[in-house]
Image (cartoon, rainbow, N blue to C red; front, side, top):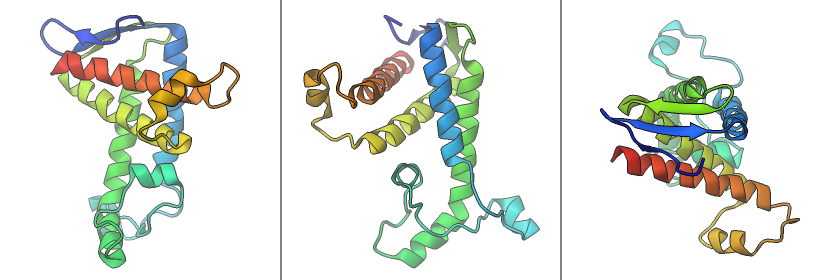
Length: 180
């Protein structure tokens, strides 16, 4: 993908993805869905289930998941943060899964053109952000990462992950520029 996303006549964005890019995105999206899908027992109260209240009150132990599902009140008040999480986490997880699923469904299986309307572009932007947050947390990305990427040897084990992280950022940037 030499050009990334570009503005589409009538609104939205369009990009051409090759087979390798589609496969990479599909695998990353699959991992994201697996990461954010709730685990453990669901709420047993039918009303709580119906309105999206979960049993979860603790910050996830997995650092990437904690980055995707942050505390609502920081660490100052664990009780308030837990209560906020109980009322919001399930809905947030469900939206992340729905966005990632929509992005996966928009991928052309053998490579090709992706056409996004405004709503689809927003789902892509949210999902690209989630992918970068999760990957960046795993790779311990910080302000010096761009410089580091330019100096890594080809055999450095960090190179593939950081290259993917950088590519996702570029893809996200071209999408932002095309829709705003």
